Structures are given as C-alpha cells and as structure tokens.
Image (cartoon, rainbow, N blue to C red; front, top):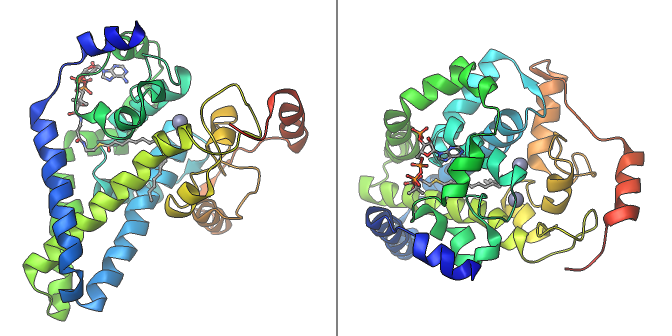
Length: 295
Ligand code: ST9
Ligand code: ZN
Ligand code: ZN
C-alpha cells in the first residue's frame, strides 16, 4: 500500500534522468581512456578526490549539518571551496536534506528513504520530486545557523559558478601544466566526480542495508568497513545515527578515519575547536541496551 502511494506520487524529472545517465556513460567511457592518462593526472584526481571528499565529510557533514566542532573563518572558507569541488548541491541544501534524513530516517519524510529500495536511496531520489512529507516535515528543522553563516550563504548564492569552476574547469585545466590532453583531463575529472558521487550515495544505500548494528539493532543504518574506507571515515553509520553529534563519527576516534585525523590535526594547530564527543560509558550503556551484532 505504502509502495503504491509512493508510485502515484513520484514525478520523474527527466532532465535529471538524462543528466545522471550521461554522467555515468561518460564515466564508463573515461575508464577506457585511463591508459592514455598521464600518471600525474591520475595522482592529481586522487588528490582532488580527497580534498572534495573532505569538503563533504569534514565540511558539510560534520561541521555544517551536525555542528560537531567549530572552525575558524579561513578553514570554513577552505571547506566551502573543497565542498564546491564535490558538486553535491550547496552546503545549505545538503545540510537541510541531511538534517531531515536524521530526524525522519527511513520514513517518507526522509529524502532518501532506504525502505523504498536500493535504487531509490542510492540515486533514484535525485531523479524525482521529493515526497510531500520531506517538504512538510522538513519545515520543522531549525536552519537559523545556516542562514546566519555568511560562508554558507555566499556559496549558496554563487553555487552554479562555484561548481563549474571547482568541479570541472580547475581540475581539468591543471593537468595541462604537465602536457595532458584537455579531453583526457576532462574525462578524468568526470570519472573522479562520478566515483565520488557513488561512494557518497553508498552511505545512504549500502550502509542502510548491509553491515552490523552494534549500537541500535532497531534502525536500518549499519557499520560497513568497505564504505568506510572509500568514504574516508563515514562508514560507521549505525554509530553515527545513534550519536550524530560526535565529531569523530565513531567510537574509535582517529582509527580508520582519515577525516577525524585531519580534524584532529587542525585542532592541534588551533584552527578548529569544541570537538564534541560521547562519554564512553554512554556508548557502553547504549550498546548493552539496544545493540545487536547482525542485521
Ligand atoms: C548529491 C547529494 O549527490 C548527495 C547527498 C548524499 C548524502 C549522504 C549522507 C551520508 C553521510 C555523509 C557521508 C559522506 C561521504 C562522502 C565520501 C566522500 C569521499 N526540508 O530540492 P527541491 C522545499 S547531489 C524542507 O528542488 P524538488 C524548499 O522550499 C548531485 N524543505 O525539491 C525548496 O525550495 P528552496 C548533484 C525542503 O522540487 C523546495 O522544497 N545534484 C526540503 O522536489 C524545492 O526543493 C543534482 O543532480 C527539506 N529537506 O526537487 C541535483 N527540501 O530550495 C538533483 C526541499 O528554494 N536535485 N524543500 O528553498 C534536484 O534536481 C532536485 O532537488 C530534486 C527534487 C529533483 C531531487
Ligand atoms: Zn543515514
Ligand atoms: Zn549525519
């Protein structure tokens, strides 16, 4: 019944279907062109993947969506630039959807409700109009901190230009310095972008479907170390949904968590502060009360 209701409500945005299909087709073609790429270009795109990734994990996720730590202005500006490299919607839109995802996880009010199946929570949700519950219940979320953050609003206002420049133009232009062909360079940027999108989406799909639930067995999010590796520390998703305000997103601190390591380095340099953590006793208690080991 619920499934039927969703089907009736879905309004496909064909432009988005064409965009996502073309992006993936171009990315597959880019794989065939990998042997033509200069090793420097591949290394550069890997470096870009990590920077853009930090714009998501340390930036829009832990800093702006969850306020799990505080950052000084230059770091916020840097993270906003890194975030534009990732082209995953503006910090404002991403953080708004993500807060709604946490508050109404895996219900119709969750933008990427995993109960609607793998395809929907992975990418399908970006190809249809949002369920009315997302918009209706989303109104209950406090976004005043985002409205009052000049860095967030600046990026939101100039988002299209920021993305064209930082996700495509800059990464494709830099390899020309070591003699790379522009078309190959562009294809490598497309490949990096497409891989990063899919890795991020895996947190919504794979890490809401497969893995262990040591902290709360009654919810869908799981711990998934495969996702964690590629998502630079964001695969401890069962823990994260139980303790979303922990800046480390896991009870293991910097271990297996590149993003946490880098936030710790910035704290050591005095660039960030007020890292929020969870009392180990509270974690232990929660595990005993609601945890389970399998799905
Ligand atoms: C992308 C995002 O890929 C990926 C997010 C992944 C999140 C993962 C989280 C996991 C944890 C972190 C892990 C990180 C791992 C990283 C690893 C890296 C190494 N509340 O949205 P619209 C209202 S993006 C309240 O247009 P439609 C609001 O009034 C990919 N209200 O809805 C809004 O107006 P405005 C690239 C809300 O029309 C109005 O509704 N981007 C909320 O249904 C319309 O909003 C694309 O491809 C809310 N939550 O359209 C673009 N939402 O905005 C794709 C909306 O003016 N998106 N309202 O305030 C779209 O084209 C459209 O959004 C749509 C829906 C078709 C999907
Ligand atoms: Zn989640
Ligand atoms: Zn989160």
